[in-house]
Length: 133
Image (cartoon, rainbow, N blue to C red; front, side, top):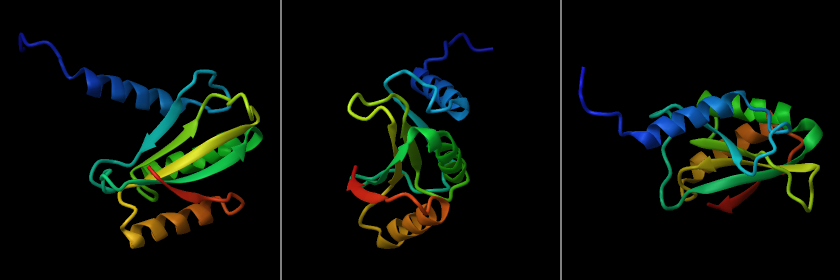
């Protein structure tokens, strides 16, 4: 046994957050933060200085099912390196939530198109827009 304390607090906090986010339902969260899902390390390229986000809005009534679909696809490596959903209602539109899927490099046209095709297949009724990260 080592006498050295566990100082990797950032990784400890991130693991705890991901465990929380894995079980959370965005329609039920009242805090003002995002729920996140990440692709397994090494399965998708990580962010670069040219990362970008596919962005879509969805109604509160369907957000939990949409998030489950995007979370599972991200964790399976089918989308980008990370997916996010806003968990707190925005005052201007409390019945809407934002979804985002992050790609590592907006200059990688093949990867951007691949993620777009996956998003269209998974959520054909949503309108996805590519935004710089």
